[in-house]
Every structure is written in C-alpha cells, then in structure tokens.
Length: 133
Image 1 (cartoon, rainbow, N blue to C red):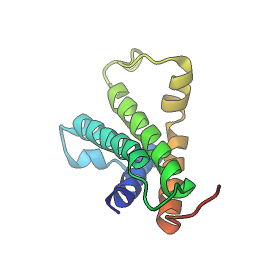
Image 2 (image 1 turned 180 degrees about the horizontal axis):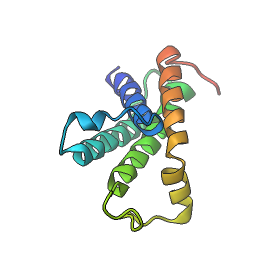
Image 3 (image 1 turned 90 degrees about the vertical axis):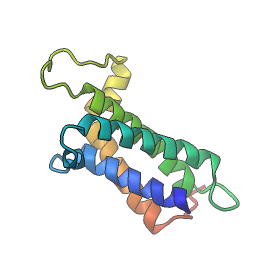
C-alpha cells in the first residue's frame, strides 16, 4: 500500500515538474533547488524499481505495477538529468554528455515523459488493479 501511494505521489510530482512550466516546487527551497531535484528524481526512480520487487496482490497488473514502475524510473532519470543539466551560466556547454538517443528521449522529450507520468499516476490512482494482459 505504501508503494502504491509513493508511486502515485512521485509520478505526479515529477510529471507536473517536467511538463508544466509554471510548476516549480523546488523553488520552495531557495538555494537548494538542485539538491531537491536530485533527491526527488532518485526517490522516484527507487520507488519505481521497488515496485518491480514488491508486487501488490497475487499477480502482476499492468497498470497497477508494471507501467507505474517503468514510468517512475524514466521520470526519475529524466528529472535527475534535468537537474544536472540546469546550468544557467554555461548554456552552450551542458554538464551532462549523453548518447544522442538518450538526449532525444530524456532531454528533448522531457515534456512528453512528464505527461506520461501524470496520465499514469491518474490511471493508477483510479484503477489500481486494472489488468490489461
């Protein structure tokens, strides 16, 4: 039950932060925005990974376990990369050098990952044991 709540919470938080430009919860902690973003990104990825280990119920549910886990890991990684790449002094030289595929997915596609995180959190909240398979 705890991973259910944490999965919904972190997927929604990371999704809103990545997709909605006005939602900047890290600014609630002035001077520590980068640390807060890294902690939230790591927590989202860890909760996503732990949803693979601790399955709710007797069998796997696609929207109840698998999709929130995958989306949580992807959203957490995207949020960590976004916090590491946020350097206002050197906009031309980002700190993180990525493979072009991963740069396309996690840097240029962060808004889409955020939208998928929000949709997955809402569907996971409404239908926690929906089985598609």
